[in-house]
Each structure stands twice: as C-alpha cells, then as structure tokens.
Image 1 (tube, helix red, strand yellow):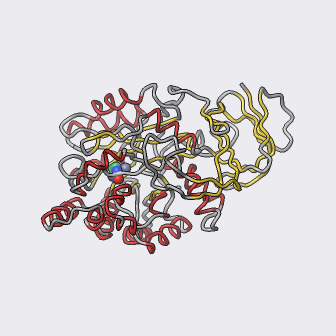
Image 2 (cartoon, rainbow, N blue to C red; image 1 turned 30 degrees about the vertical axis):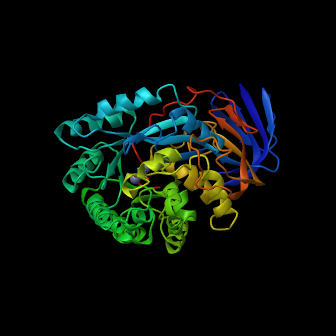
Image 3 (cartoon, rainbow, N blue to C red; image 1 turned 180 degrees about the horizontal axis):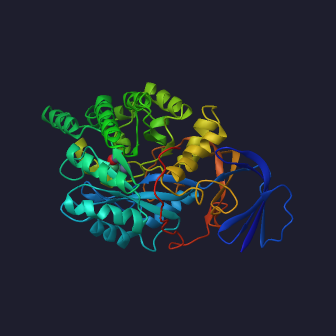
Length: 460
Ligand code: DUC
Ligand code: ZN
Ligand code: ZN
C-alpha cells in the first residue's frame, strides 16, 4: 500500500514547508514539491497542517490503582488517542512490592498484548529496589527495550521507594544507559496533611488539593535533582505542575545539570479554583493537583525557555461511579483524569492559536522530544525519509466543542465539557496505514505494535 499526501504544510520540530509526502509500506519514502510518483491512494492536504504523530509518554490504561482499575482498556485508550492525533503512548508497568519486575511485565502483557489499536511502549515502575530487582535492570534495557524506570516519592506502602533505594537504582540504571522518571512529591508530608485534614473532618475534594501544597512538589523535585546530580543518572520529572519545582530545575542548570521535564495539558490550562465546586471537583482529583494561575504562566514560559520539553496527559480515567468511592472522603477518590484524546487539540488551541507557543514548539513538545528522550528518534517523532509514517493531518481553522457525548475515551464525563477548541484532527496515519479518517477509526485492536526502545538520550 502506498499513499501520496499532496500539498500539506509539513511542520517538524525544526522545519516548516509546503510539500508532498510519499509513503510506501510503513515508512516515509520521499518528501518534496510536486512529487511525480504512482500511489495507491492520494490525499489532498491543501490548507491542512501536517504533524508527526503525537507521542503521549504518560498514560495509565487498565491500571490497578486505589482499589479499582483505570477505565480505559488498551483498546479504548489507544483508539481514543488516535482520534486525538496521538499515534503512540507510553504506559506504566507497576512492580508489586515483594515481586519481580519480570512478574509485573508478564501481568501487564496479559492485559495489553494484541489489544492496542495504536503503538505503545512501557516505562517500568520500580517500587521495591533490592538485590534481586537490581539484577533485572540490564535485561530490561538490553533485551526488553524498556529503557526508562519510573519511581514514586509518594504513595507510601504501595509504590513509594525511599532515597536509599533511589540512589541504588540510579547507579544501576546509569550503568546500563537508562533513565529514571519520577513522580516527585514528598509522600510523608502529604500523608501527614491528609491525616490531619481527615481528623478535622475536612473531607471534600478541596482538601485533596490542600493536602499537596506546592512545597511538597518543590522539595521532592529538588531532592530528586540532587540525587541525579550525585549519581550522574539521567532524570525526567513527570507531571511537573508548579513554579517551585521548576525553579529547582532551573537552579540545576547553573551547575550544568540537565533534568528533563514533562508537564501535562491540564496544568497549563486548568487551575485549582475547580476544587471549589463541592464534589464535582472530584473530576480533577489527580496527583499532583491543579495549581494556581501563576503556575500556568511559569509552565508556558518554561516550555519556551526549553526547561519543559514534553506536554503529556497522565491520562488515568475513572468513571463517575468510581470517583464516588470517595464521596465522603477525598483520600478515597481514585486519582486521575481523562485527556489522552484532547491533548493535541487543546494544546494547539490554547497554545498555538493564542500565540503562546510556535508551531515548531508544538511539534517538539507533543512528539519529537519524547521520541528523543525515550530512545525512539528518528523512527518516531518526526516526518523524514525512513521514519515511520505516523502522520496527522490537521485543520487549524475548524472549531468544535469537547464533550463526553462525542469523545471516544471510556469515561462518562469530560474534564473539558463544553470547551470550544480551534483546530481539529482530520486524518491520522499510523505506520503508513490510514487509522483515522473523517471521524472514523479504520484499524482494529491488535494493529498497535509494541515499540522496543533504545538507550536514552542525555541531551535534547
Ligand atoms: N497521579 C494520578 O493522578 N493518577 C495516577 C498516578 C498519579 O501519580
Ligand atoms: Zn504521578
Ligand atoms: Zn501517572
């Protein structure tokens, strides 16, 4: 099967040109003006923008968490991602404390194998670092193609590791060419504040927010950065939300230390005033919580300063009925919100359309940087001869309204209900195959491939 995309405006992280793209099989074969080639299918992209397929490096599909499972399966989640222009996701395997990493990989494969519609990979979350786990790191990097290791500085008793384990893991991961990603919040401080609020009878979603003040994130981020500096291990902070934490990253640059930073779309465009809506605030109960307007400004600036390289989602949807598990106690509300389908359109509409970021920056933070940081570039993350033909055709002028009644995520509410966006994903190709066309998905579950990743970049 070959496809010729004619006359689109092709945007990559560092170029902007109107040209044709010729695809044969799974990869791009040629890019140029007025390409004179025979193709099985021709697409006229006049007036459309063409982006590399989005990569969302932070999603949780079918994940056991807080006594339930996130509500998108690998099928529904990766399909919704495709509708929104995201052709690849990176999900998290969670080691069970006391068990091996390999056990966890097998468990996650049992839910994901042959079920993905779009491409995917995993980060391996190490929740129990010990002499046995240590022996598994090399195998994951060199044989499984899983080169990034997630750590939690919070969720004590289930996911959190202490600093002794963190240092040990960093040394091992560095030795074999991997990277550590971190949920950087101070778990002990948060647990103290949760208990205090509950004792005082403060049980609404607002107290989820008030139990995780900015200092809990700033402190843990700085501590993580110091440990990464000491060990020399490449580090990536997931879902960074606030000024205090970004200041720690900025300070590290003064000693020539590079820490990769991801924020998520919700932290750029939503703020903590949503927690004042009584129990409706549970829709946005996630960790870390939404922050203040001043933090949004810091994050947009951080993107343009090159301190924030990635905009992800931390997509972790729960049905309203699941959120109701915490009706009388905010600490029992499953943490997470749905956004896998909305990320690209929201960032285009709120970022590019409102002149906060350029088109090139949009591509960098939605696709290219994640591919580089996580060892997939240039197979993924760009439009170039030889790269996978993961391509999004995007109408920058089409307005539409986000709603749970039209989205494809398996969740019965939207965190963005009624939000009008400018710009719409029209057609999506995944490895040369038309995956989405005119609001219809053309590929089945099982089409999505597991992508083995290389050792990671230390500079982007
Ligand atoms: N935060 C969330 O909101 N959900 C899943 C895990 C996390 O760290
Ligand atoms: Zn997290
Ligand atoms: Zn997460």
